[in-house]
Length: 92
Image 1: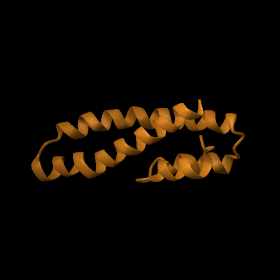
Image 2: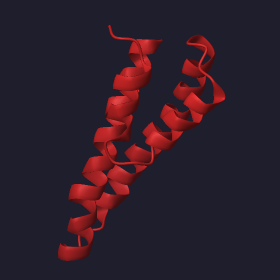
Image 3: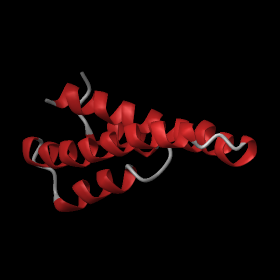
Image 4: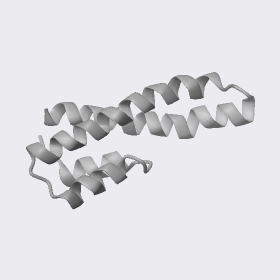
């Protein structure tokens, strides 16, 4: 289960970076909104999976409520899930 959360975490972080760094500039600079719709939907699904996974990690790893909130907060920051992975998940 930890490995699955790590994969979701990485995919969520990458999708967020693609959304912010590629899709949004294409939308606003080149009038190509279709990429935001596609990447945005994928990111939204991965975001929900990340939040659910964070809750499962909270239970499995016996995190404190504070740690859970930090990990969830990391999901809304660019590169945040990478930080959460390194800081709060066991090395494998």
